[in-house]
Length: 354
Ligand SMILES: *Cc1c(COP(=O)(O)O)cnc(C)c1O
Image 1 (cartoon, rainbow, N blue to C red):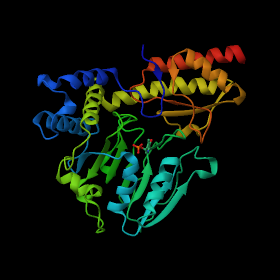
Image 2 (cartoon, rainbow, N blue to C red):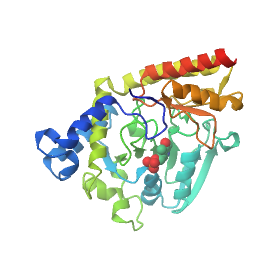
Image 3 (cartoon, protein in one colour):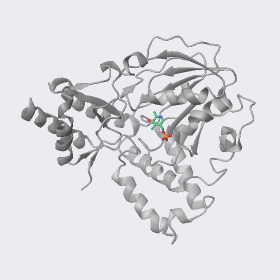
Image 4 (cartoon, rainbow, N blue to C red):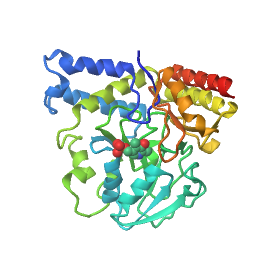
């Protein structure tokens, strides 16, 4: 039996995608070779790349102005590629938590960083709002979902300067207006596939904004001109993403997914808010449906609660060391049923200990 996997990343994947990938490992499309053993320039793999790309375009309604790239190095490499390609003098960043902090650190290597808003004063338990976006900056960096603190940007600002977004932990969980962004990136391993590939959605005419000398691999132009095939791409990771996106399409796409995610969110947070033993750490209006951070009011009971969840085949709910407590990551592939099991354990815990 598969566990109720609330892990924060790499996260749970749909069984459909795992089974389809399993088939492709030994004999892909009946060609007598596995998908990892063929040329990335073969027509069989090219079909995978193009299918994955067209599914991203279809599911996120990506306009013609933008293109899709599959890169390596994780979102963490994007933290550097972003300023390398877009920062001439000064960039605006919002300090929303651990991941935007890492993006800020990289940007400082390439120019001036103007941190225009921060939620550090309350340990990043809320999303900064009501800030003014300066027009003298090359771009605004924003993180759509701060995975570690469990907060999400509900409404993106209307930015007078190009906007760049790290959507690693909530891409494909809700519809997004891609046209608002010059660059979107997401490490695949939270919501769209395995680690090893990073999805990049780039506005085509935004390349070449800086003249700095860039290593070939760090230049978006290289990858745009070569359809992500400048060097050997992560073949297997892209294949898994393709299967995950096929699954997503089969259940009705991001609109349907958002409704299911909302059900999981409602079920879980209703319990946190009504169970006297627990409390949520994120500001209610900014709570993320992807990562729900919560605490036992009496932390001395933490181990006992963890043991009870373990007995119910729940894994991955220990909170990040910087926040403590617990975190239930409810990515797209996590069934509603798993949230029911967790909620039942919370109820049972309150009956026993309350
Ligand atoms: C996980 C995560 C990252 C880091 O991704 P890597 O692919 O491991 O580099 C960056 N940003 C956010 C929001 C994340 O959740």
